[in-house]
Image 1 (cartoon, rainbow, N blue to C red):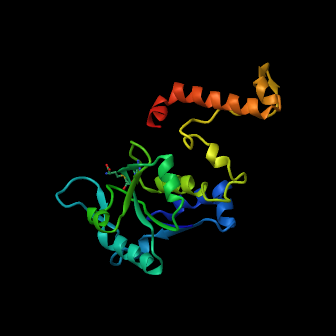
Image 2: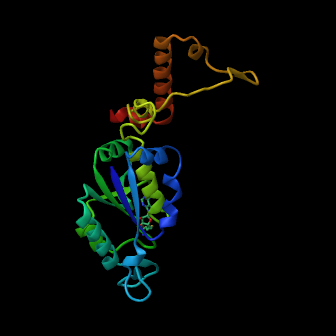
Image 3: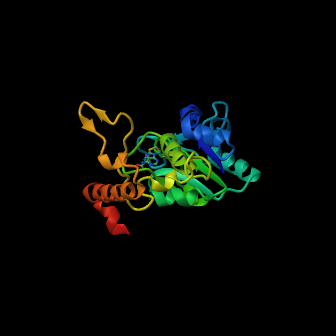
Length: 226
Ligand code: SAH
């Protein structure tokens, strides 16, 4: 899968994909993340990319021309399954949406800044708008990184244990059960006995019960959605 991200701040997107699972996904050739700097598409001597909004009011708006030039150049090189704009008023990112997007070949993500982007980009180029939650961040870079991470870890072969993403929270409509590692006892705090029995059937039952309990306590809404 290839994901292009259009941004005014490419440096904000350097680190998130250079470590851990996202790094491995790229090294294995399963994921290609291409950060596209919008600045060279800016207008005039100063490579302007934003301007005051019509009708007045505080805050700059990202202009239509640099964005459309950048999008169209990329679209000439390959066809994108979706052109995604990260925005607080978009569809909320939840696990099923990440699952769906992980089946695509090429995605193009646009990061906004300041007041956002000229509405005509949204009307004529964007095919999908995604929010990472009901709060406002200063730019679309962190939301884009969240989206790419959520998608990237689902690509077959990215996680070492191929099935492990299936057992994460939300995948089966339940939160994850608690997990423990060595030592068996620390300051008198013990690992639950059942996990040390080696009885896999019992362990699975215990995990399921814990996952259910946790979901009922913390996110009962997940059970109602089923
Ligand atoms: N004025 C806009 C917010 C602009 S925030 C509004 O009220 O809707 C600047 C940029 O940050 C946005 O263009 C978007 O790309 C990004 N952004 C901020 N919060 C976000 C969120 N919760 N989810 C996705 N993108 C977000």
